[in-house]
Image 1: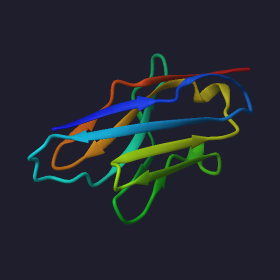
Image 2: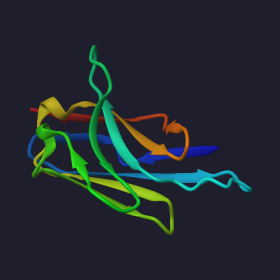
Image 3: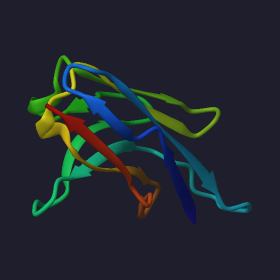
Length: 117
């Protein structure tokens, strides 16, 4: 069992920046470690889509729409993942969900990001 808690969402003007954080709590006694962590987002009326993922080691992936503007990092010792979002656009407005995978997939409750024009 993994619980994910996001923070850092809010309202920002176009061109501004926000940093999202997600802390993962792994149930005591769990034999499974977190492999991939990441961020997805869902805009109103749209399906959830990948923003960025970062494995424990290996290749980081970004959606084409955020490449060059967003940076994902993680702290394996703390089981935390971060998303630095720069040059935000109104189309980045969405609920952002933290994601973690062990042998199962886990999701946070989501944090709202609103970018005004």
